[in-house]
Amino acid sequence: MLDTVVWATDGSLSADRALPYVKHLGSDNATRVLVVHCVELLVGGPRSPVPVHPDEERLGSKIERQVSDLAGEGLTASLTTVTAGAGGAAQAIAEVAEREHAGLIVVGTRGHTLVGDLTLGSVTQGLLHLGVCPVLAVPAGENGGG
Image 1 (cartoon, rainbow, N blue to C red):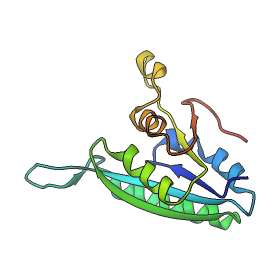
Image 2 (spheres, rainbow, N blue to C red; image 1 turned 30 degrees about the vertical axis):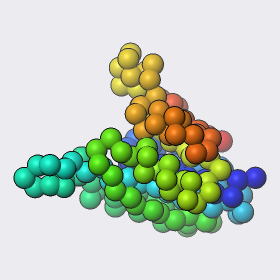
Image 3 (cartoon, one colour; image 1 turned 45 degrees about the horizontal axis):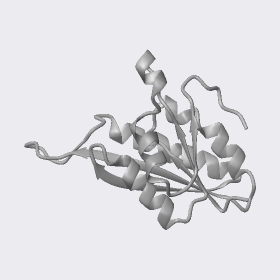
Image 4 (cartoon, helix red, strand yellow; image 1 turned 180 degrees about the vertical axis):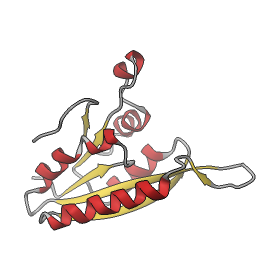
């Protein structure tokens, strides 16, 4: 049994593909779903710091709705938003997972090109490398399920 499952999401369609797995894992009322969103910031520019994703406000709102929907479906769900410098999302997510004693991190992967299909993505790779707990990587193109 998992006490806490982390769903690491950037609000992308790739991350959304992992949501059915999160719902399935969180359907056990004893399992808490902690949604972690990392806002990556560009630093060093004249308007520093600036979010890496220009539509960060829209993505944040979407993720808040998803957490509300999870709670509305009876899951114990909450949102933690963290910030990191560009490229630091995996470390920030891993720190939250470790602090919250997560038993699993669920992420969606991207695969936009042949090379992309051969790699998992920098955040997923980073989470696997950091090894704070097991990682369930839902591949691009996967319809989800449980």
